[in-house]
Amino acid sequence: MTAALSISQIDLDSMLGVGVAVPGPIDADGSLLALPLQPAWRGLKIRQLLQQKLNHPVLVEKDGTAAAIGERWIGRSARARDFAYLYLGTGVGSGLILNGSIYRGGTANAGEFGQIAALRMGEWSPEDGPRMVPECNPTASLPV
Image (cartoon, rainbow, N blue to C red):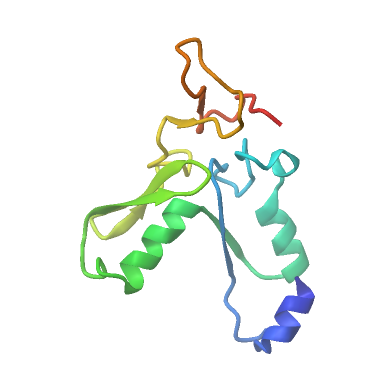
């Protein structure tokens, strides 16, 4: 990370902080929970680790929330006070702007949809369709 900052030629004295977008679900303190398709990163305290390495404040947002913030700043919805940004990644989620401000909810995971289709071949439900797994349940066991 230090090498990336050095290459970027950013004046570290002018840097206010670092923003990181990650697939949800996340913890309100910036820890990664049951990330889909990334079992090695589950439980990683990414915010804390980056703050220690960079000696700057770090904000961790789920990817859908980060996308909604970007849309609010410079997108077509720059002047909209209320909208939902639909985000398709390893799962389906969204970012919510309500009354002109980002809405994270009590767990920093507002806007996550309840289920996604399992991506691995051979993961079938008893009804002979793709097995559904909860995306927002940090204790859910996902195929590794």
